[in-house]
Every structure is written in structure tokens, then in C-alpha cells.
Image 1: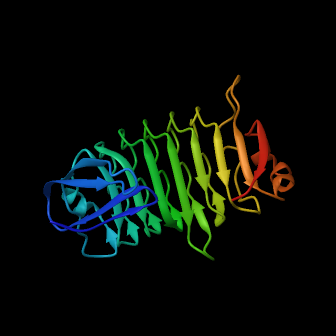
Image 2 (image 1 turned 90 degrees about the vertical axis):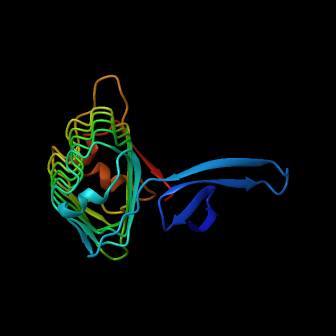
Length: 235
């Protein structure tokens, strides 16, 4: 049974309390056009504590767009080598343990909302991931650990929040197709010389920063040297 259904920002959001299949019919009130959408709920995820541990892993289904809410943390190694996820979306999970989602080879999109800490190698070796979007927690610094997104060769777009305070060593090592990084932090977060890979010859990599902060990022060589250009934009 579907217990709720709504349209949010052109996205159909459904809440279910059982597995199974159904059909949802959407009607455009202006044109009176209708479209039938087949819906399949393959698994329901229930975690009894505020932390997902490796023991909870058996509850998660294959071939799924993972959406996690209602917990605060994911422990070390929980989904390491769990290759079936297509996308990962978390809402309110503040802490990701060491290697939490490492080597999830099929994941293409990662969206993390309300994050405080991303552990060592938490998302490394995700060979298919293209886009990473992270939002922070108001008045709390965000720390991204060493090698957090290392060895993601198809990663090309990253969005980081204003709360970003530190990005660790080799965090984006060997992300050779990286072309766009958007960061809403007015003050440049602490990065190391090897946090980002060097720009591949013949490609452009653009860093987008808040208006009024370009000069600050240009003044930090660990930022400036890893980007072809730095542009100011509204966030």
C-alpha cells in the first residue's frame, strides 16, 4: 500500500508500507493529459538504532536507487563492495564511517544532505559515479576525510556547502575527469597540495566560489594550482 503521494519540485514522491507493484496516474490539469507510471517497491529499509552497521546490510535490496533517512550515522565498511546501488541519497545522515560506501561500482549519483563528517575512503573506488552533491548542517563544520572520493575516474561535478571547513589528503585523487567544483564557503577550506588532482592537459577545470571570495581562493595555492580558472557566482 502507498500511504502518501505528492509532487515536490517536479518529482513524484511516494511513501509505502509494503513491497509490491502498482500504477500511479498523473493528470495535467491544464491539458488534461494523463500518464500512467508503473511503481515497484522492492524493499523496505528499517534500522532500529541511529547508526547503520554491517549487520543491517542484509536488509538492503539489489538494483536500487538508495534513499536513506531517519538515522544519524553509517558505520565503517557497511556497504563496501555492495555493487548494486545505482544512486545514493541520504537525508540527515551526519557521519559516514571509514570505507562506508567504498567500491560501489554501479553508483552514478551521490547526494548527501545534512552532513558533518565523511570518513577516510568513505566513497572511494566508485568507478561509475559522475556527480557528488553535499549539503551541510547549519553552524556545524563539515570535514571530508582523506581519500574520501579518491579513485572515482568518471567524477566530473562536485558541489560542496558553505560549512565545508577541511578536505583531507588525496580526497579526490585520480578523479581525472573532474571539470567543475562548486563550493559555497566564503573562506577557503583547508586543503593540502594533493587534495585535488592536477589538471589534465587539454582540459579545463573550473572552481565556482561565492561572490567576493575569488581573491581568497586565488591566494591559496593549494586551491589555485588545481583549477584552470576561478569564477564568482551566486549561491
